[in-house]
Image (tube, rainbow, N blue to C red; front, side, top):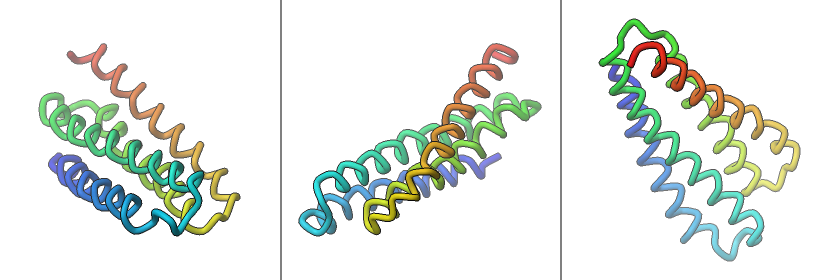
Length: 123
């Protein structure tokens, strides 16, 4: 499924753009604390964009694995929930968004666990 390679590329580009925006557009406009929160969002965004590339390559190698496909979708959902909530929290200061971030983290962890199980099963 080339969708994961496409999602990986789009999200890698977004992570670079958002990182640059944070470094150049937000510096001096938000607190140092929230700038660090923004950077954490960008860091995890890029890690999981690369993870989506990996999933895209593995899905073609092991097409019968629903675990690998599920892992890709969980990484994508994790980017939205984890990184997205950190971006909005950083720029808005709405602290309740911090409750969404762990859901994204859980999606990331589950995605990597699914990938481990798939590797044990099929590789």
